[in-house]
Length: 367
Image (cartoon, rainbow, N blue to C red; front, top):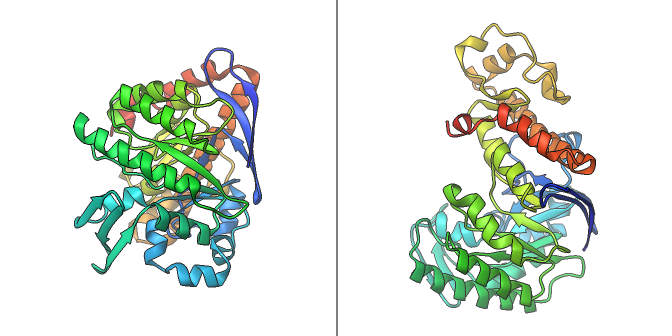
């Protein structure tokens, strides 16, 4: 993988860049749609390409359970299995084994857990995670880490951090496929000194990129500010699981390059749309006779249909309604990131940020 910084904003730490992988180039800053189980919910690959998705995510935990590595390996890897010829990033499964399994035991070797599907016993550690991701053949591989819950005491965070760093070294030494690139994950909960310590330890291991994980929403920007100064500028920086438009642009202005989040697709399934006039709940009765497009400023397939029609589809439980809203939300996020890249190139990001603050005020995002 090659990462090239292209443009630097003069008033913030925002930058544009290019990540070159075997399966294609990725322009940064970038938002990555989440395809947990080898599919972005309700969308086809052609629909993802129509909205110019450059890279998508898959998840180690879910794919190891279903369909299982034997099937994906026999198919020739995740790209061939799901017929996706663009880059893929796979999460390590560390977050899921803790959050989805109520019966799990963490020790220095890894995590013993029961499947949330059928209760079957499994074990996932750094070597197991690397082996699964090697079989998947993703372009960007994430290290296996211990993601602490929130809140977490300082003492427990230290213990988890020590384990995460030990696991990081194991992952770093694991031989992946020649086209694969390994990212370290900075942990440390809400504690600035631990975030600094984690970043410095991971940089010593010389990963291909670095992620910031384990974030609590209310401490997002302070954690980013405590971490980024200690990460190299010549490698990609990935903020995991974030977020709404305000969070994205504020993180970009701090120097983050890559993002993923289920927010746009999950909101779509709840009847909410992100638009260039703000976030709207299409299910509301006031849209029952609104025959205007969902978003007049966004050119995507959903733009052909009225709010009234999409509302009707949702009310009668037609899956097409979910598809149209998911297209809308992911198209908006990708267009949003494209406009951020353009603003950085023109050195007008501060003006664009003021526009976003008006469209997406904090009180609206908390609803």
